[in-house]
Image (cartoon, rainbow, N blue to C red; front, side, top):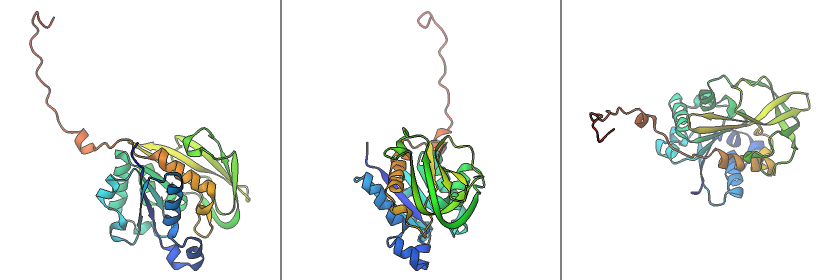
Length: 250
């Protein structure tokens, strides 16, 4: 199989505006995720893109050459253009994988791909999260134990307004008693979509070895297997005439 081609999209605002976040992620959240993918897929081609770059760091050529796109956003969802959200959606329908992380649940591409508000309950608190592994045989959960804990995370709680997942792989429990569907997959068109909950910017979540392994596993599982261009699928085609039956055809 050809080397994995990954693009990691990140707002890259908190790291520049808040000293505490910059200390946790000196190379940006996208840098931590890039390293996580390369730990498991050393031959992968990993590129990064950020919000304030021209066209948000995206291009038609980049999306066409991406097997799986990671998306982390939080405070500037509205700044992502509708046109680029539509292009990401179309790329997924054609076969590109999409891995949406933490507060990216409220991003334009994720809401557009799933056709829902993707709203949820939340509490920005420094509390423990326990993630339970529901499908240990699934490739995304290869090497993941029955459960693991993050000592510091932001709480997300149900109801999570998304379509019923094709696969529910993990659920989270928080100290306040809330639970959340924290690792889910969907198929949209020819593409695979993954949502993975942990990753609040003020905590070192993307340095946790098991979170990093899940991210790398998700990249390989959701990768592009095919590219289907809808504009070519619907070209007209004339039927060839059927010859009159003769003894040779009977």
